[in-house]
Image (tube, rainbow, N blue to C red; front, side, top):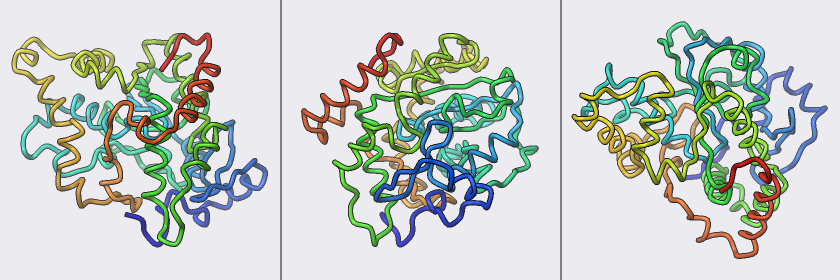
Length: 325
């Protein structure tokens, strides 16, 4: 799975001149895979930061936009598949020719900071039909000003931080160049507990969206991966209501809810040819996004001491917020 070079979004040598000037002023942490830089209290690779800056400076939100917000490895691929299929069910009925059958969810719902504004480019978004559907890993406080000021909607999906860590470690090893030895589980865990990870600290990322969802539930729908897994029909209907495209009585009778859930299920997506052999424009193989997707998989990797340590951090950081895992 690993290659001779890391994917484009991890390469420091592709950072813009403006970004390089900023990088020299920021705190940094060296990891086995990449150097991370702390900007506005969160951690990014050099090239990721270039996309963040361009997005913040140039993206103009529309009131009808829908943004899918997640921290990395929190169920992003599944959320993209579900929402794309939900929003486009009139124009793209579920058949053997559905876009998900031939295209990875990450190509159907682009990241603002990774794809559209990567490396300080300013894209022409005129071809995006309304409602425009985008994805972001950005923390709430770092969203472009226009997102905060518009009536656009955000769907935030979070996941048990212990499962997120295990998934991040596996994903990082899939991205590492061939000349780099396997990334240390213990070293990565230590940094994760310090808050040093892509778009981390995890607690600040989650709490930013959680607190805003309490203040403004019409703008932010806050979901937990575990709840979505346990009651998928309930939460798919919540998504539809939130995005003003509720299921009709006819659709309910015809089983459209279950059709969407089956098409977007982990097992179905993983077994599609495009996700077995395809590759994103960033160079990441589609198979990298389909490992297990199970709740509680962390128990197969973390020691009891590690689990207790993360539980203590979670309890401390989320204390009094009303949110628990």
